[in-house]
Amino acid sequence: MQLPIFLVPLLLLILSTRAQAPSDCSDPADVTGVTTACWATLNVTDTLTAWAAANNGCAAPFSVCFLGSIGQNNGDCTTITSSTCSIPNWSLYKANNISVQSFYIAHSIFSIYSFFNSYYTAIEYARGHAAENVGNITIALDVPQTTNTLFDSLLTAFGSILTITTGQPGLDQALNAIVQATAVLKFAFPVGSADSREVQWADVDAALGEVADNWEGNVTQALASIQEDVATFSAVAGGGAFATSPVASIPALVDTSLVGLNTFVVSQSLQNNQWQIARADVEILSVADSQRDDGDSSTAGCTGYDSGSFCGSWWYDSGSNVSYSLTSYLDQGKDPSDVFGILEKYSTGPLLFSGAVQCAGGTPSINTDGGAVTTTCLSNFKVCT
Image (cartoon, rainbow, N blue to C red; front, side, top):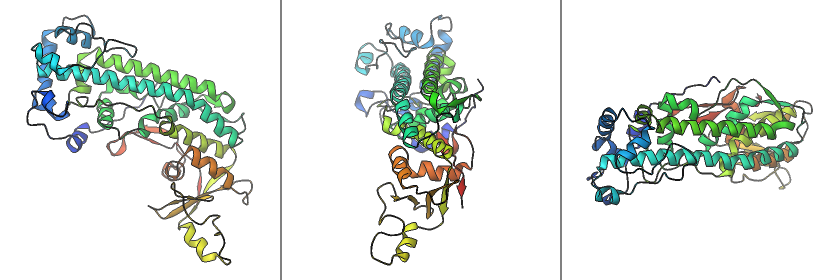
């Protein structure tokens, strides 16, 4: 499977986001947890390099070898299902004269394990709701079940779980550190597979199960690739990206994590039913207000915007002063009001309308423009102006 490699300048991210090192990095119990800045202050990378040179004969995976070498023999952080990988306790390390540098390495081993476990759990959680959402959308929009979508596009849309849930403490930093490690990236972001299969909407349930299986398998491999090889671990953790407290995690929040997949399905479903986007370079209510003649509802079909900037069968983008609606290829007078209720339930105006404008007819893809992992073309409507 051919997979793209996205490169993000991690150094710029760290310089712009990391906190100043505490005055005393040598005793994590006396500061606000573990910090990225202390990794450099303590020269932890030098400790890791020296350890690797002295222990290159260890046949076990790197993380097992390292934890065993400091007396933590029961720790296995290489697999998703491990029950023995636990967060290191600085007080115990200090009592046993284990260096703070070793503690930071052990903490990063656990943080990486915890991150990929949260990733796996989020996929499992999404799997349980994705097919239900897709079924509800296609039924509500009355999509012909014999129409098709691309398997690869489903894969990418499902993967938008990574981009919708960013902004959590330490998460953007962790994602961008993974982006830098090419040996891990091909597993962590298994998108752009060049799989040209077409999937009928009637069979989308089984297809989504395969999509989730693909992601879970790749996440499992990503964790193993980091924890089993010291060079790969150093590439991911060497800048202190996982030396954070609390550890980075991907929240399993279906309402937010599936909005990307939902948007893709809504976009495809509406296109299959011959809808396209209508654009007006004006605030629709300002036009409607000027056309009122009886003091009743405006010609926009409503009298004000809701919290999502929807108004009847229009969505208003205040940032660009543009209003969007839907129009039918087959029936120019067809009322889109009922459709808008579904749009508000499963997607957002920015993703569905602004996203389509930015996409200009492309296919879903994950990229790292602007220093953050993002998904584009979840909505790829034709826009009429």
